[in-house]
Length: 234
Image 1: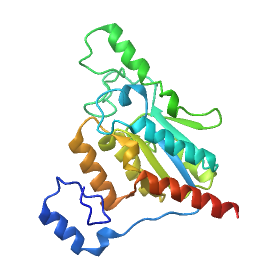
Image 2: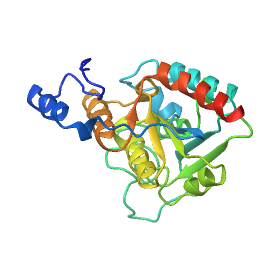
Image 3: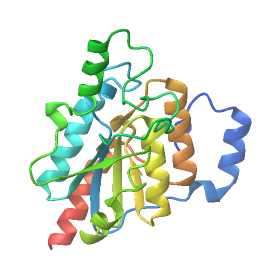
Image 4: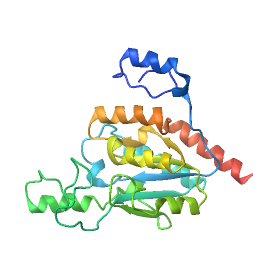
């Protein structure tokens, strides 16, 4: 990542693009924070976090984020793959992901397919939701599409959404775009998102930071959560 810019610029970005972006002040604009943040954990199930990860410590770092949020009474929400059945011939939720029966096409046996499908419904204990936290089932990539998530967030007065989870270039990015489209200030801590492919991970973070969200280091996010909570309680 380029250390000379406030933008999230991976090393793979051509120098000519870096020069152009840094010459355009509009690309340095930050969405910033509002007064009432919340955390949204997207698709952080065992099926996705136990396989090849661009961010090996994503579960541990997400746990640290949740610990801070809960300690200052910032609400936490979850979005998980929907278990609803789809009509015959219905397109898969996302290309290259689970097929219409929620299992990958290349799993060799029925037992393996069942095991993989079961992992879609299990969140690692370190980051699992607490009893009073909302879990939204989503039928598509975005946690906002065809769900009541936006209504929930508005009900709690949320104006800033910290989004973490998987996969960076898929459901995470789709959720961030819709969060932006729903007028939520959107923050993405890169330590708390992961993908199976390094290129899509880095490019998605780069693109989200340019257009839809602030890609902000976890330490800064945790510190800001404590500050915002302290201000709201004073």
